[in-house]
Image (tube, rainbow, N blue to C red; front, side, top):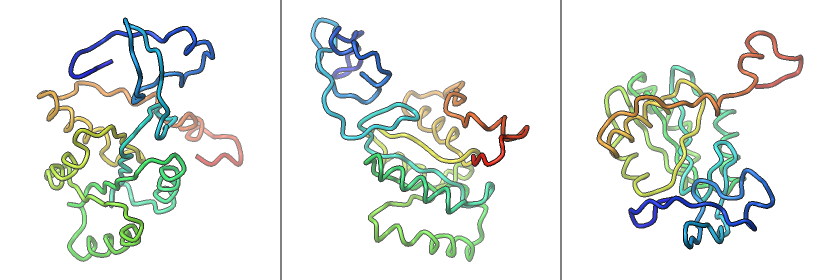
Length: 196
């Protein structure tokens, strides 16, 4: 636990851990500590169960405008999940360098409905370092999570952010625990009726 820049190693007080649930105390929780023990976990503003984290300022819903193609149904599902879990969505659209001027204009028009919902969209190109500074500024000092389909640049964005935060690249980000359990099963032949 980090308090005012000082790291403390803490354990849950007995009464807090007796329910033996995974979400007794999780990343993002505001807590009260005393003598190396967590006495109280304060009420959460929100919670995300995958990955297990609370009190998020934003969920950065990250999609590519192309390669992989933009999936509006999956996009809408993630927006609904953010709303359900009471987490403010921030839309990050990557790979804008793959669109010509007309395609980019059409793509922005497709997402124009978000403006009326007061949802910010940030267009970035990790390849050409466009919009990264805007995104970093928006997420600065905020507890945020990146979410989106495979191949849209989430890991690359995380590496950029880590380099700017700690001055070096993150050597390895293990995202396997967050991958879809049925991916391999689906590839080899998922049970009939399974929708991934």
